[in-house]
Amino acid sequence: MPNRTQVPELLADPLAEANQPSSLLARFGPDKALQLDSGATLEHWQIAYQTYGSLNASRSNAVLVCHALTGDQYVASRNPVTGKGGWWTAMIGPGKPVDTDRFFVICANVLGGCMGTTGPASTDPATGKPWGLSFPMVTIRDMVRAQAHLIDSLGIDSLFCVAGGSMGGMQVLQWAATYPTRVFSALPLATAAKHSAQNIAFHEVGRQAVMADPDWRQGRYLDEGTRPSKGLSVARMGAHITYLSEPALHRKFGRKLQERSAPTFTFDADFQVESYLRYQGISFVERFDANSYLYVTRAMDYFDLAADHDGVLAKAFAGTRTRFCVASFTSDWLFPTTDSRAIVHALNAAGASVSFVELESDKGHDAFLLEEPNLFATTRGFIGAAARARGI
Amino acid sequence: MALADTQTNRIDLRLVAEMVTPGSRVLDVGCGDGELLSLLAETRGVDGRGIELSREGVAGCVARGLSVIQGDADTDLADYPDDSFDYVILSQTIQATRNPRLVLEHMLRIGRRAIVSFPNFGHWRMRTQVFFLGRMPVTDSLPYAWWDTPNIHFCTIRDFVALCDTVGAEKERAVALDVAGGRVGVSAPWWFWNLFGAQAVFLLKRG
Image (cartoon, rainbow over all chains, first blue to last red):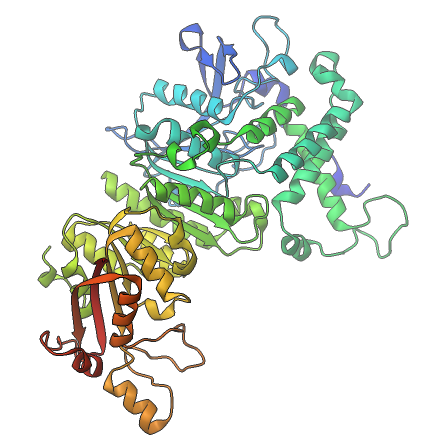
């Protein structure tokens, strides 16, 4: 095997992180029971989060950052499992577009996640065993409800900004729709108001790969001491392709061979792109729980903001005072510009204050996480102007 | 801030701003870098929105705190509901649209009033360039050669008046500006405007 596909060394134990995260943690009991869209109630639950910067005296400078499918609360600091830097350090930090010298940034692990917020990898207090598939199904709105409890517990009435890309952008839209008076400005990037049939299809392939792994054990792998690593790895490899674009893959790998001068005429990873995907798959397995992957992809699939408002997306934003800035990327085929335009169209119909820009990039869906000067210029401009309007 | 105190040297923008009632809701179609929207926000206290084709223009507007959508007047106006604005403005942009009639119809549908300013292709300098040089005109207000211009539908003041009649728009006010930015005599007949107005600004409403 080429050395790139070797299993990376881990610092913290991912299984322990699911119950006892290295980050900040808010615990809630029956007085703050979490009502879920499925009808289930979580009486004892917790949410893991990180903060950066400090809250001002008037509590008006809080920015909530919502993470994407496989992200976590370590948005701008070292991840305790992988040892890598935060996933959005390009955007968030001192002097960055979301300036931590100026704003109080909060990022929480989503409900259903596996980095300390209650999810299928957490221990069910009723049984003392991991929840597994007995964990209730969660939705994007449930994730946002959980975040709202956290924001309440921090004593913050109104967020200066809610920002995020992809699934994070779905949460941003849900926040603006559910708590319009609590969101001063909203920054939904590379996202959609509903998950498309094509994206549900991709997710289903990933879930079936997990479930087809014999080590999945009908979801009871944590109890039985196995892990569906092969299935989850394949799911990640498939998903990873959808985050990129052909130009980006071509520029990075083309048809170049991996540490050899001629094809081996076997099913080894002859091509660099194969080796890269195997590495992506394996390193993902080490930090992410397979059942969490099933639950969180399902939450995205169920997301359809218009469906909660008689099928009319504009009604979700009726009377909103929130300032929106929507951005998409030209080469994003997972959440194409047409998805963003549908959001903008609805916001226009609702009379909302909205800016929109389609950014030129050949890096695909992942562009929102990468060094994109145009994205930074736009977000910096939007956030700066919103801060002036709010007097911070 | 009063209009007279503003820094802008674009007389046509000041003329447009004069026509807008303070505190109203305005959509500026083809808003460029947001100069008019900023002027309207500062001097008229308007709640302004913009549409702009270029990413650079949108980015500049967003940084100024304006709400601007990257989009195309020819296709995106259809997305706006009826009567969603008090004024819809098309400043120096109609000649760059593919379907000026449809754009004007949408403006009158979306806004209670429409304001259109445009360079007059019937101005005597344009006519003399075509007549004596046999070349497409290149002037200060239209500084493009025919092969690299974003403008595709030039019209004269008389042509625009005819378009207004076709779509049933009522002309509430009309002002022509000469090359120096001075107003061409308001009592002058159309043919005089058409010959000596370098630019025109029309305030329209549904007929």
